[in-house]
Length: 570
Image (cartoon, rainbow, N blue to C red; front, side):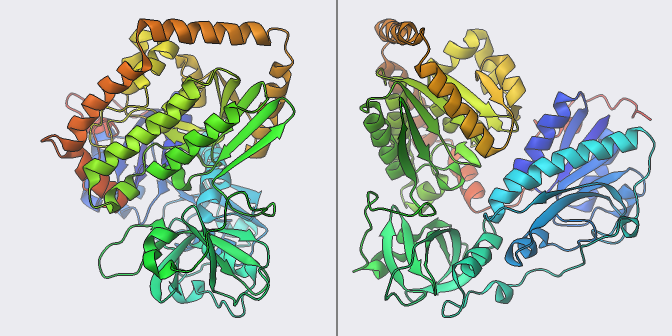
């Protein structure tokens, strides 16, 4: 089919749908939902068989849905209506939730149902559920809806499906508010989880009005007053609850002017005077929080790192590089690098750079530290290194993984290895060394000039990664660890390690890693300090979520010069 993806932004769900639909041979184009006239024009130009709307904040104009089937992806069970579907489900403790693909009608979220799929709810932030269970269910239901459309079937009225859902209003800030004196840990987590990503939970910390983001449960702290800040760690604060405590990793200051979401300790600053730093090596319960954790399982070392939204600040890169080097000194044969559940890594931390007050200088410090983390992987010669990508990756985060000896990804992961969408950045992280090793010189342009997302199967076909593994994040982790353990016992292990060392020595002799780094950073300095401000403009718009005023041409195929409209298929 010829399908137009109409969306508020090309977010993770939209990209996953794009990858899955393209893999099935559909002809795709994307239009950002800027206003009604732009939407109408896009339909006139592209003449789609259907419009798919995975992420909308406004209704589709009637003159569009009356003319073309419009499939609305709603993150709610049948009968659910309203803009805060997933928020309500999390905060009210629903045990099961779902995704419904609805036909657009005059009633917002009230159209007949093309397809629906439910899933068990996990105790997790909204952003995690959205990128995980919601996205997976959305893919399944959109494919089912398109099959039904192609077969000539009609959507079913919601009333015929015994709907359990109901219409609910926007979840207001008053509904999200935490009563620290009475809410237990579960209630506190539910509220912060429900507002995770956006809009957060309004609160006051040490006299400063803020929004709260990123919550992790921890053990009770005897004698601590509920709501009080009792410790810090790696940018997060620990607050007491009536029956335990919670780590809160990020805050956004309430202000008439737009503010950035930043590590909690950075936002609070001197207000934290006297609050102790809880060392990382303190014993924590299984639900405690820390960004980097190392575990040893026989001959396999497992290094976990979970950075908020996959962004890596200068300090985080430095901690990761040190952790990789320390893991390399352990008496193991294989090291598994397991990034975050939703994001393996996304490269330098644009929010911290924006907040630094010296963006060019902090950009340079951050990319240098990112390069140090990459180098720690590339030069680790004592162990076989496996990069295990449970979640999506972009820009420098992709090349962080490519420094490993083997790269495996969970099916459903989306990669964006290019840098160009961030103000035409050149990129570093030794990509000029790592990428040709995998895809050949001829394949470099196919990866770096392509601004579209890449799915796991395409990444394998390109040679970008070695394998894709099916299953949940938990099943993926178990499978990777089993493969690592088997490889550590493989009779060919020593031969593979010898081959690895010989190749690194030969590569270094042909051209030192430092030369690749110096050449890349010379280009990056132009991006950071040069006359072209594109990177700084793009970064500012990204971190402050400036709405799009037009759709980039690499997405809007129908707006390219010379686009042939053709005839829509019946």
